[in-house]
Length: 428
Image 1 (cartoon, rainbow, N blue to C red):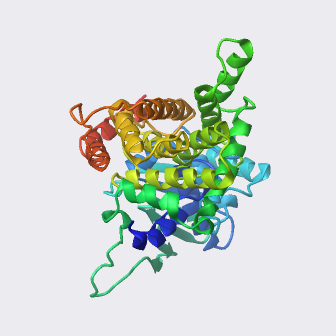
Image 2: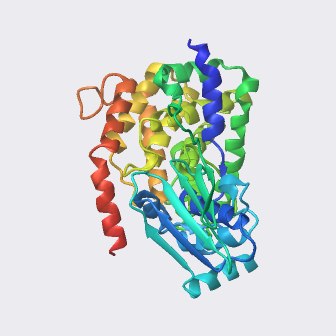
């Protein structure tokens, strides 16, 4: 076992699995707006934002918590007027109806604009807030909370990692040396006290699921499953429960519920997809607390590992890759070992690779449920010794090679898919 990687694994999970209130792309714009406002005296009178194409795609149609509206303009406005700049991805946690009303007034007065920036960054948001006498600009890039510069009244007040003649600091990637087997061994053998923090993912995402099952949000995917169980058109059972409870959490999250999700790799839906299927299976097999924690850690870290080979935002739906993390935890809970987990991930790559991300919106709950369905199907196949083989499509014999093949597709040919998706969306 590569125990020297374990500290890095823990640090990575703590960094990538964090609470997020609302879809993280509009929240990133709200955060930049809130930070810009803090640098100024007086009330904002105008906001101008420029974002990368991928951020625009993911922010156009998704609900912004507490506002009853969708899109980046309302996120920028309410973030500037009432955001908590030190709250990270929970920047909107304290907004009030009065704040929302004021933000809507700014939109009605055409005082908020959002455009596409010509930048190479996959994730980029530049927000300028003006008061009667002052102006501040904040730029977030390459990470949803990663502030790279701030300018107040034309004067640069902050630049991240500014160096003179020194070489740029190389970002350490803990996964350069790691494999899927290392993640499996870590999740099973790490001291419980070092990993039990992951139980917060259960706490947050399960509450979000309960909220979604009320039927008040989005396309009501989770509630639809429940209604049809009650009608007798669907039967209960493990698969139905996984779909019902997982999609319900996404329903609530994508339609602006004022409850945080535990995210994964910068996405609340990815956090839900990596959490809820594992939770349902753990409850089904009556797993004890330690077993559940280890399964959740396996799922979340595997999801981060898979995502680490891909761009932060792409044309490949992130719920699919997060569910590949979930299938690891699910397969183990159902009695599988690493060989079965590898088979299950490979089968999922052969099944749902290619599901596109056409922006964040309520219908993402359908993709979350489809990914969860693929996960339990692949887990059950693997337990019976069945998998998509290395002679089929992009799947390789080795799980790590299969992950790299899928990621090459996402980072390569699917970049043009992303361009086409945004072109369609902005001209509808």
